[in-house]
Image (cartoon, rainbow, N blue to C red; front, side, top):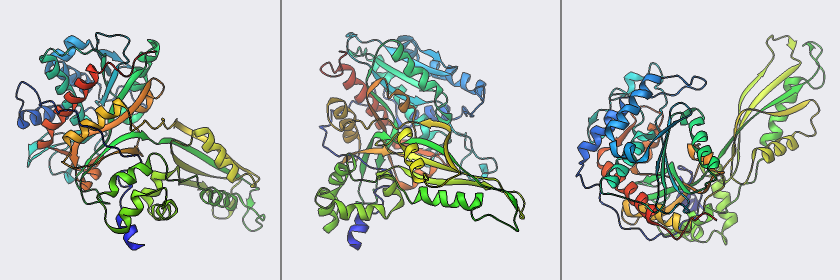
Length: 489
């Protein structure tokens, strides 16, 4: 059993929960005809990082001058994209580009990225090897806030599009590029861009956004794995309130508000949501089993037969357990202000990350059911709610293009496995106007790089940049020429 536990350790570290499947890699397209070198691409990305495009929740005018300057830089750096794709500014700062296809009945493709970055925590600037907005190119990396999340993705995608247009690329299918300006604080820009499609009565064939990536040494196998996001979790926060008689602490009732609240929290935590090995986790296990050893390989390769054993092992680890179902996390508790006075009310805040099998409505009903026997307890949603979008398939032509291009640009032999994100992306706002949504950043990362996202010393490998350009050229070129799938009904 220890061998199985060791073999499965870390499977949830990047929230892998989907079915594998071999996609025939499309032939990679060369980086570009202009011969942009690693150094040129690195310097270009460094320039983008120097714009401090920091978004702030509740303050749409934050960094307005920096965003305006960045948009000017984009226009100067990618003139053909701006000339031929006529960008619209939506929601005050997002950019919506359109390259019309020759066959208007084909559903368009949408490539998403975001301009904004999170701030650097005040007082931590000296913990960075290079200044956080320096965009320095040194030691084989481009350094700075946004290098990974996600100006590297944005600049290389725009470079791929620009070089295709330089070659005279004319797609059969319309191509949209959407550059959100507030992804880190909710994504009103993405909502407005999705509304563009809805207002036109159009559905996207597929959307490609940030999310999964290629991990050099995946914990369960020790080898490379390319994880393509096929879904992401939703978000729900609830307030649990307990009410009881107040008064002097010398004569407490049998049930105080604080005691009642503690029972309510325990009842909720002790009534977990369903956690199961199903699509897409069962296929992910099969996909990585070939790179595992011993009984772990046998069990992972046959999840239907060894399901109970696998589930027990996966539930023992926090990350893999989270990948299998909706999570419950009490985060705030309040009640009382004086040590000898009984509060009449106590409250707790509980955050849930919703698995795609659940919804905010079903989750709220589940929580209320858990405390149904506790008189004086209420459970109400607070803050913003994000419903989990449906999991996209790991089959079909769109998957072949996305995953095939990932296979072509990942280390040789790396299995391509779909991925369920615990975090939220702008792509979720397209759930109502897209047939499929995929999330993949085409670069190789070490597990340690994960902590750099929103953390100190964010950086991206210079050597990865040409391959990223080639990846986007491959995906956009293949999708733009595809005429047998994604046709409007």
